[in-house]
Image (tube, rainbow, N blue to C red; front, top):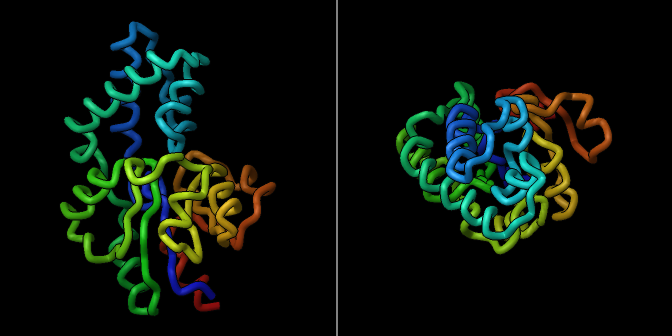
Length: 207
């Protein structure tokens, strides 16, 4: 079994839903576009910001995409860390995985500096040996660049985008149901297992 485990961040390790909804709608309003429904926004979590804008508006105008991204980041710098909370199982689970001899990392479309700030606040910075964020790659998920940069051996994520990322990087994938993707939606993607949340990982990896 793999000795290095790479995690997605949003809705795999942390609940950032409130902040993402706030920042998406802030950015849309700055473009005089209607606010998006919360459930619509949740379905975009894990996409790049450009793909999020396309999914929510259908627009491909490069100037509007750039303005959406810059306004999202501006608002996220103000609110995202404060309204993001780690899932309760993360501290104990990551500690146990390290005790089992696994090296841990994170690959996410979220900016690395923001992930690092959240981990530092929670006292978890030393749990993850490598963090690849949105500013570290030329192309975002499902392009496998971030995952291959992290030299992953197992990827854990909450979306079919994560599954496709793992498949393209030729890395085994474990799906977690802590995000907006249902169990049935993982039926058609290659995976090792589907688990409710990451607390099930230590037992699964012992088998």
